[in-house]
Structure formats: structure tokens, C-alpha cells
Amino acid sequence: MRNLFFLILCFLWAGIANAQQNVGFRKGNIQSPEINPDHSVTFRLQADKAKQVLVLGDWEANEGKGEMKKNKAGVWEYTTPVLPSEMYTYRFSIDGVVDLDPVNPFTKRDVGNIFSVFFVDGGYADQYQVKDVPHGDMITTWYHSNRLQADRRLSVYLPPFYGKENKSYPVFYLLHGSGGDETAWVELGNVARIMDNLIAAGKAEPMIVVMPNGNSGKQAAPGETAENHAYKPVMTNQLPGYKNGDYELAFPEIVQFIDTKYRTIPDKAHRAIAGLSMGGFHTLYTSINYPTYFDYIGLFSAGLNMTTVDQTLPAYRDLEGKLKGLKQTGYKLFWLAIGNTDFLYEANQTFRKQMEAVDFKYVYHESTRGHIWANWRQYLLLFAPQLFK
Image (tube, rainbow, N blue to C red; front, top):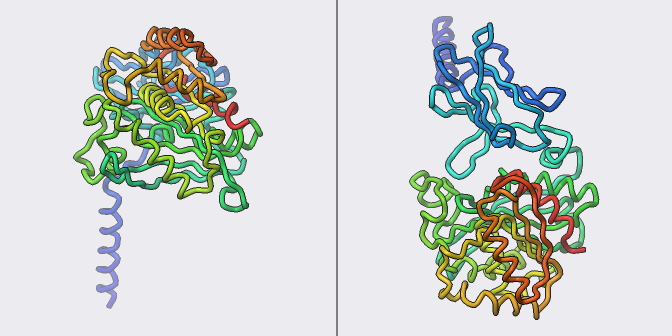
């Protein structure tokens, strides 16, 4: 009996050990990244045999590049200049091989790349983190598109207390850029945290935020479609349906689904639409093709390089005439934002001239830097409080 008991214990221990065989346990006491009191950031890496180690990040100082030095303990180390408050992404280059920070468990996917992540507090980043405030719900759901002949996935933010009181809400449709999907604004844009914090502070009206998948040839994010892992993240111009106008013309199906499924105020005065890059392009053409749908329109670093667009397609035909149509129908806010080093800067200035030529009123915001998530999160912080006032 004693031998049988011993055998059972051995089998149990073997099972536990086997279940844990892919789990790595961090060794040593290396801290990376370390946010210093002055808001500089120190990175450390144990790489005994490496000859050159770089840190590659998305901060502005030194173009986000730092050469790490091996200290007396044999640990590679680099400290940035003082960084403004933001959420930052970075990776290490170890003798030319780019990899994550092995002691930082926090990561984000951007298109097909995975980055390590950290926050520098004391400003914008405070709005991107969880606070002790009422929280909304972030969910995913599916709708059917007749025009695109597919079931398609959406991410939806429901504000705090949704469903707990007899109340209907305005809706903000927020669109991603090329290479993104319905998870992009959730993960990289920190939408739920931003909206929770703005609403709790009384800076934004409680609202539903809907984040559709803008890749008309795909149902959902990579790994969430019937193709499973056969579909890997790529830029949208490599996917079927890119800029053929179907997504924009099919947009009323999304609006109708949301108005049917959720407690919305289903009119123009209580709908907003905005998007970054490709999503800004989608926003423009959705709003001007359906001028009775949205009173609030936002273009964030919009992809308005029209040299890549077939302007004979129904969705993209007669930009000037459709702008005049939206002007005549009326709207409350048309908001355009761009960074002064963005590669789309000149295209956005050209579009401003097109609007001004037909006396189309808009609000313009110009920031520093380029085509980056730091700008788009900050634009959301500026745009959302202006909605539904």
C-alpha cells in the first residue's frame, strides 16, 4: 500500500513538472525598464556573449536609439534622456537580432511586430492607465455584412453603468489604420482606460465606442478568423478589398447593427466618427457618402494621398461635390489633426485647401512628431471631450 501511494505521488509530481516545462522563471534581480525620478528610463540586459546591444524605442530623443554599455557586473545598460509622459514601446537589438526585453512581461502587438511597453507618468500616460474610477465594459461581438458577404467582428466599449439605468447613449465610431484591426485601438490606443478616465473626470460624455475591422477582405483580427493561424498580420494594402470603396459603402450595416443591439440614440446629432491614417481616409469617405449619419467627424493623420486612389469608383467619386453635400446637410465638428513631421503632412495640407475652396468649415490641430501612436492617443484625448456637447 505504501509503495502504491509512493507511485501515485511520483505520477502526480511528473504531471506537474511536465505541465510547467514551457514556463520560464526569471533569474537574478535585473530591473528593466527602470523609470527614474527625473523621468529618464534605464534599460538593462544580461547578454554575456553579445558584442553590441542597442535599445530601439519610439521616443523622440536620439530618434529612439541608444547604444548600451556593459557595466562592471557584466550587464548591458543604457539610460535615456528625460522623456515626456507617454506610453512607449521598445525592443533590443543584440548583435543585429531584434528581440523583446526578457524581464519586462508587458507587451503590445503593432501589425506583425511585438514590442515591450512601459509608461512614463505625470501627463498623457496618466490617462492610459487604470485608475480607481467606474469602469466600462470592453467586449467583442459579430455582425453580418451583406455587402461584404461575411460575418465580421467589432470591438465595443460600453460606458460605466450601461444597462444599469434607463438610459440610451451616443455612439462614437473609431477606426484603425493600415495593418490594424478591431483590436488596435483597444490595445495600442488604450481606449477603455482613456474613456473611463475622461468620463469619470467629467471631461467626456458617457458614450458607446465602436471599433470595427477596416480590412474589408477579412472577418476579424489575425487568429480570430476561420483561417486561424494561416492569416498573419500584414499591412492592409496587401489584403483583398483595399481602397475599393466597399468598406465605406457598407458602413450603414455597422450603424444599423449597433442601433439594433445596444441602447443608442439613433440620430445624426448623437453619432461621431473618427480614424487614424487609413481610418482617417475611411472616415472622410464614409461621412461624405452618408452626410445624414454623423455630426462629429475626426481625421487623425489621415491617409489622404489620393495618388493611390481610383477616383472613378462610386465611393471616391466627386470629392468636391460630396464635401458641398455635407456642408449643405450640416455638421457640428469637422476636426483635422496631423503631426508636423508626418509623411502625410503635405497630403493633409492639400486637403485643407480643397475644403477651403468650397468654404467648408473645419478645426485644425497640428502637433509635433510624425505617424505614431503617441499622437493618435493624444488626438483622442482632445477629440472625445468635444463630442455630443
